[in-house]
Image (cartoon, rainbow, N blue to C red; front, side, top):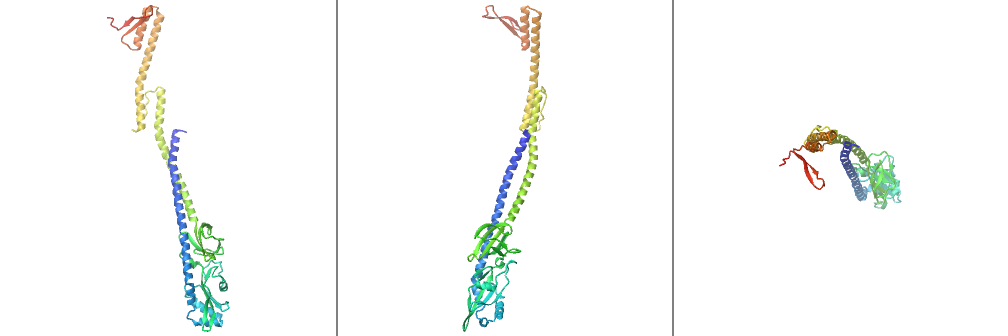
Amino acid sequence: MSLQRRLTAFFILIVVLPLAAAGYIVQAVILDELANRSELGLEPAVDTVTGRYNERVDVLGELTTLQIENDPNFARLLDRGDRARTEAFLQRQLGPTEGLDFLIALDVGGDVAGGATKEGQFLSDFSPPTVDQIADGPLVGRGYVRVERIKVKSPDGNVGFIVGGFWMDSTLLEGTQQDNVNTYLVADGRIIASSQELDQTVAVGELNAGRSELEVDGEGTAQVSSLNGGKMQILAWASNEPVQSLRRTVLVSLIGLLLLAITVTAFLAYLLARLITRPLDELSEGARAIAEGHFDYRIPVRSRDEVGQLAESFNDMSDHLDPVITDLESSRDQLQRAVERVGATLRSTHDMGQILDSILSTAADAVTADAGCLWLFTGTRDELYPALSMGVDEK
């Protein structure tokens, strides 16, 4: 791989990797924070419904008693066993009363003598219990809460009982819905009332109090609280879909941003790598030209930075090489001529004097000397003596 490609890849990595890591961290932090905020609304929603339920239970007995207190007509109706008139009386009493959804009259034997109910706000396929089922059922049952039997007395004694209560329906859930948090009432493992629009009851199975993952209208997180021994349960639920949808959107946006960053970075990295490698290519081409003997080759100086200074140094080197090489070539030619002259002398004569004179003059010419002296050994070869000189004052 060329240096330019390596530099391009390196620049892309040093930009894209930190960007990808930062994007992943931001995505995880933001989405986790959104999920946490969504789940933070679960417990307040449950607490709101629980508080509203407790408030209505606290006044239920008093409200029921007020419907017959100081009204002897009800005792007479109940004593005569007139069910139609008894139910009409109960309906009149029930109509304007807030906090009561049904009133049930019982005779002294505990049998239902009449009843009146308001329509409960349940899901369409849920059938609330009848007055007979409520009268014989527990205090908290499927979709209702009632009080203990309250005696109805006349001057002649006890003539029966009255029972009051309210539906555990969507009226308990009003105002509890928050962003991405819905509340439900659950009986026997099925949702019977909802703070949002549901077409029909939804089976959620057996629920344990506390926080858990639960599928209601898709996947989500739930907070469950039981009422009065678990006969009814409050369910607050937050869908995971908004966070998952946002996760997909953020992921697509992050991928798009990375692709854009890679494209832009690759282009800029290519330009930067080219800016760095181009002077190196020119320097390499210049060195190749010098090696081939083109000592007049010059590298263009494009900047005043370190790369430009390198180009100037190369050109200075070329400027100094040219005269040095020229001098070397001149010396080489001169030496070659001197050697040829000595060879010619040796071929033309055997006179030792002429040969020595030729050697001395050739040596002086080879080193461009103005003077020279040739020394020889004596016969015993233990001393030197000047046999021949030139340009030397012999005095």
